[in-house]
Image (cartoon, rainbow, N blue to C red; front, side, top):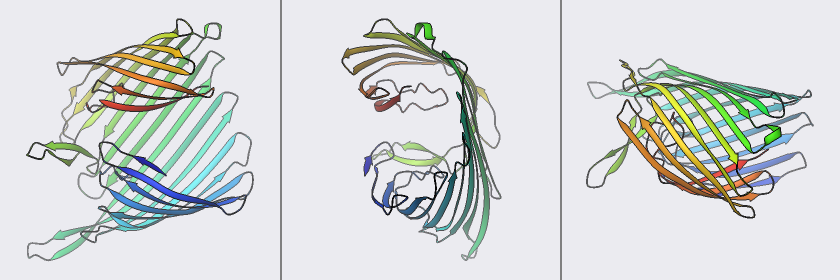
Length: 378
């Protein structure tokens, strides 16, 4: 089981798994979510998920799953199935399908969903590549109230597709390249339901073998985001109760971001480093009649790590965010403490006293508070 909480409220999962044979296992879980993952709407709901996974051979495995959702969002039963294949050395493949019918608990409108996805991956001698393609069709009924008070039903079709790519290449013992391309589009026969998302990342990491005290990472990111109206933002209504309501996200963001991270081990106990990032961006607050204005930003971070006890580290950061086009400048500090778990994993907890993130694609100021971080080392 697991339990979590945050700005959207509580969430959790409890379940059981049964090993039917050395190749097959069955599972049953109850999941309570505080956000629907397929459209970003903040609305509490529960789901019962049951399924079976089996491994036919060393190269083939499959799963079948049933999910019944209920709560303050469309309820109903959906079905999923998938196959994973690794028929050749260095290659792996996968395919999955999802389909089902959901119903709005208030209006009784139906939503019919069909989706499919394929995956492929390759890895050999310092080179890894993974790619996935997903396509989904949603047919949603809309209940219309006519002038005479009667009701009529119309159907809105939404087609969405997504492609994800990830590449890593180790040039030599001291340097490696990384790349990422994610692109998604959503179109609809209705009004104002389109969406678009693109993220391109190119990075270069350098850690010289002759002087492994130095670690550097240069990264370029292109980010383009047009949220659909089903994606929402929290708006605080300042009344006697200061209620939080969901409003449709109505903006366009496109940004070019350059960043450089560096860390250097001064001694066995102390490491110093920092980060500089620059965003050359534009934002429009209206999707229908976009008018873009510049949104440049510079982020400065100074960092010190202290290895004060065996397997324990402390982290100190000073941060400055400069927004010249908005005439705004913010600063703050971040502190944390980490525990080494074995030779390759570090677990940490800390507090961010600044309200902003070190991710310059994130435009809000809601990042002050406690954080948990897990770091994997190779």
